[in-house]
Image 1: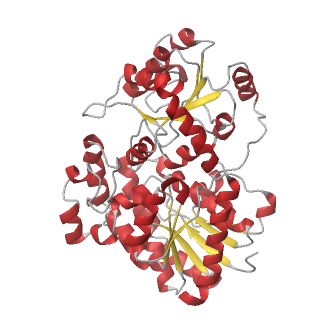
Image 2: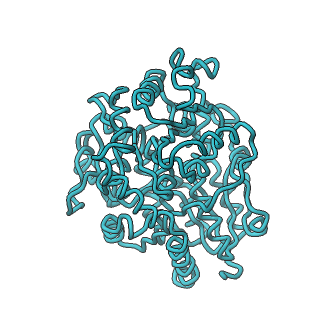
Image 3: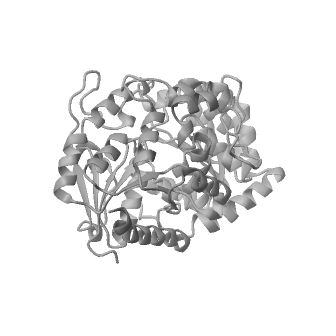
Length: 465
């Protein structure tokens, strides 16, 4: 047990960041550490409910966002906003620096754990004399691709990453064969998005450089057993402690009480083992009508049974408008499309699921491989393209082919699905995915990483202070 140790955590306001931070908070609380989890009122309401046994150890601290010109009130996470308005969320969030400092001065925590983009929280911790641990929930491969820190800003960035084209090959500091780089169509958005100026006044690269400079150590959602070669490079390039915390796999599944989902799970029970494709792109991935329809036609052409968790897009007036005309009738009995929240862990754990078509976000990749399902990846934003290449490099995934402009066709979807699920040429991939479950789903292994983190936190207080 970690006694009376108190840690404050401050994730970026995207659920792809908040959920891994909460998973880490739960792991620390289970080790006896008191955690104060900083977020905003509406986000705290939307987080998964905590076990009653953890409530005495995890304090959810709601700091209201101040009003900012251009920021729609009530939109407290990236999922609530169109991409072009996220810059206003960054401005509003940074205005919480003084309330956070007041909290830190009153709480006197032993450590603060800060998300890499939340540079102002890192500065607040430093100004209050609180030891600082940065936490990145991206793969070691993605972190290695973007940094050493000296190449994030200034002359270093201009020399190494002067243009989108410079992001389309593995960096010079990766000394072994690697596929981890952006496609040209991805780099055209990634380069200005990461290095370019925005209305918040600070580039994302600058934010991350500030946090990396301020922190005493970096924790990373990674493990040696999966990407040890990239982790080793990251540990060497940062010149400060880098602590893998494991993959933070979620445990078990819960009883399905929703009647609509009970009916769907009854349908799953009737399917052959490993025969069904699960399709899910989450709430943050906003697909166009053409993209949704090509995926739909691709599923139809594949002739595979499928379960698709599809959030109703903004461009669809009614649920039925999201799919091609007559689609439900043509796929009835073979495919199920659900347009409400989906119990993803329970779906992936079902024995009839054999593969998952998704955006290649790291959290979803962990959940897919935790159960030995074959990933079929269709990346769209941020680190997803890098994750897709990493999974392909490891022989664990099929990436759907794209045109130079990022477009894909129904034929590309169908071909990739059949390769991953049923074709003889995909058997090695299916074996690798099943083998991956022995790493991704090994709760004992990942608990050992948490134990090492707790040991560092306990031993590091005296050194840092």
